[in-house]
Image (tube, rainbow, N blue to C red; front, side):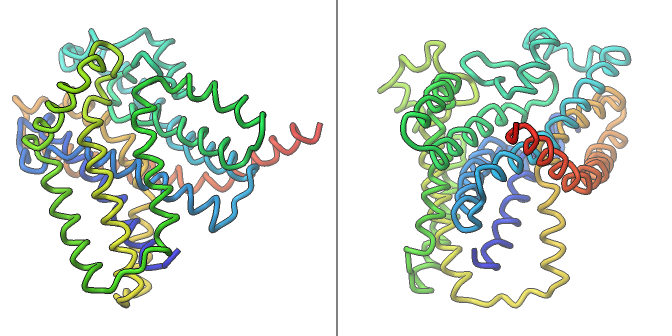
Length: 361
């Protein structure tokens, strides 16, 4: 992959995580920073497309083996998911003891703790029946993405009847809502395969890039979403009768957003190949550093924000709530993420040894 495109996608990825964080922030600081809210769901669509793009890259360009695919995806997911689950349950227990009123409005939507833990660890929290992972709302997307990893791994590495034997249970496990977003994820795969085939002149690429930014901005507005989803409801109202999960309600406009994101990446790729931005080694290291904490920022911020809400209610201690939410929460996430990242190589080596022993028997 072009080095400049790789750096750009790192910025793109971190920006998406930051948008999710900022979209949730006003709720915990008495509505302050409301101007930054409203793009959380759209940012998750960015993640889905980028996820498909990256998986296609590691499987084709880096030629990752099936063995490495299993190890790398497992470590990548669980190294952050397990700390997120532990943090969520610990903070939930603390809030229940210290200030249960701060999450009283959420309690009716919670499932039993054993069911919640099981669905979180198995990533079945969005399979047909949604299970909210307590106060970690962004965790919902894991129930989509992990099944897409399984789907692609089977399609890419298996052939013949064995492929279908594994594929059919995965498709059944997905449920209708996750299946609806599979084209969004696969669009990222297609985008990667097209990036070297689509050759654009610099003026055309710059124009397409600008238009894609405008289209993404317009496609993320509430008015645009409501008009398109009204059309979707008229033509397919039966989808809304319990078959479609809340997290998939905007699938129609998300398809449009997906096309805009794909156009954006393809045009950015052509620009990166045509223009040398001459970024210093220091800037490149900084970009890589912040992007390494994207996943942790995405999964860890919500439990910590609810902790802030319980300890510093914004209606009573607004200044403390703002300082804690804006400064302390990102700092804690960064500290936790550094530990996660430093342990990942050892976890990968350990899992590799265990799987090697199992497969050699």
